[in-house]
Length: 145
Image 1 (spheres, rainbow, N blue to C red):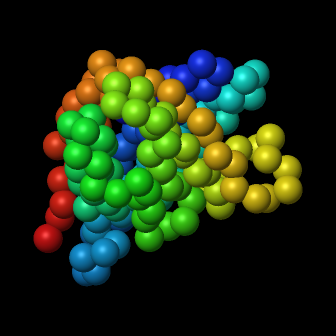
Image 2 (tube, rainbow, N blue to C red):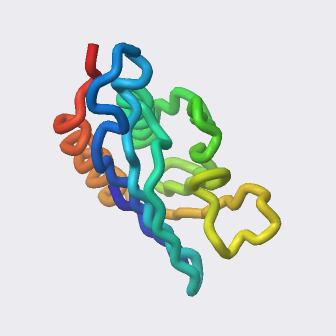
Image 3 (cartoon, one colour):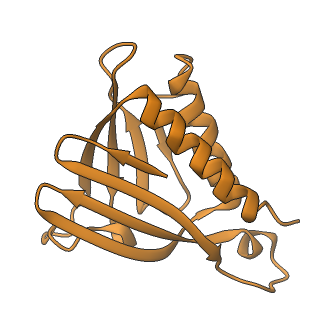
């Protein structure tokens, strides 16, 4: 899934399940996530267990609701505080997000260890493409019972 803005890029890819064989439902559904971000001239790449399978489903539902102009909530947070999304779109047709990166997802250029907020402005076409791409990725890593 990729979203681009004027001076920034946010890319999220599901790489694998974190645990291949665990008795815990929670552990079986944690995903290794690859992030690539770029802000102005700074770039960051990281891999960490940031989201679970069902949190990817929540992210997809949230993004669909925004694309369909039926926003479920202005903010989406997850169990791991490293990643969060906010919809700051001023009106219909314009899509603006603030993506909070902290903890394991904190960019190296954020030297004071406070969260970094990546501002991403994107088109509806790109938002729909990002949703489709993330849906395809999640099909490869479904919720495991």
